[in-house]
Image (tube, rainbow, N blue to C red; front, side, top):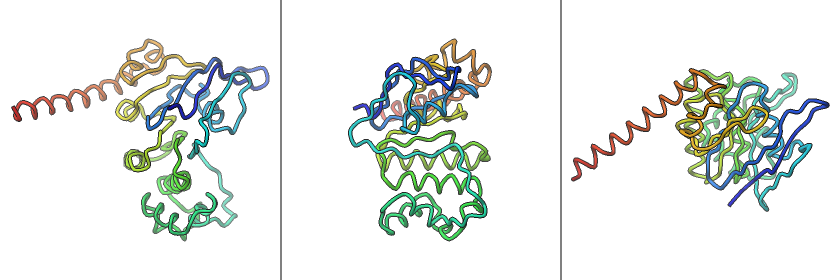
Amino acid sequence: MSLISTRGVGIRFGGRRVLRDINLSIREREIVTIVGPNGSGKTTLLRVLIGAQSPTEGVVTRGAGVSIGYVPQRLAIDRSMPLTVSRWLRLAGAHQASDRQRMAERVDIVGLLGEQMTSLSGGEFQRALLAQALLARPALLVLDEPTQGLDQPAVASFYRLIEAVRGEIGCAVLMVSHDLHVVMRSSDHVICLNGHVCCEGTPTVVSAAPEYQALFGFGAEGALALYRHEHDHRHDHADITDTHAG
């Protein structure tokens, strides 16, 4: 079942056309990643999909009762405003204290509940944002470059957490990411955006597309090589296991 879809969606800011002819569909439980260069309209598209911005043209259709959890690319909090992690989670709505406690434990911020949001490290801050987004147990989790600015261990830890939580909740995931190796390893469907959908499909299909190669060049080749290495290694391991089993 489609959770959210678009038909002919476009966005103009003044005389500038940012997006055009966007047709896409996000289905239950799938992981969809949007990639594209800076200025390609990725964040704008996410804002349209979650209902924070109306399209200039075209139609966005959301399934009845579909709940969306959103983790923004960045969130500016006034350092003079007292806002503890516990208070931040309460802003998610009328959830029981026990639900907030369990979610804090799940994303490993239970020891930070009394800390100010502005005092957290980058990885801690992103986990606090994620915890709030997950409290409603969304059918669709939307992530806008959630690991931007994090070091590599924090990036790996955050993506492992996303994969685990998705399995537990059973939600679909739509994310914007520049971590191409993660895209190739984890996504069911990739959308390459540059003002319009240049190409889309499975990671291997998109990586082989000339439009994708033109945008990402050698970096894309590296990501694809890593994906193929891991993919082939898994198959080789399975073949060896099957041989021994036989």
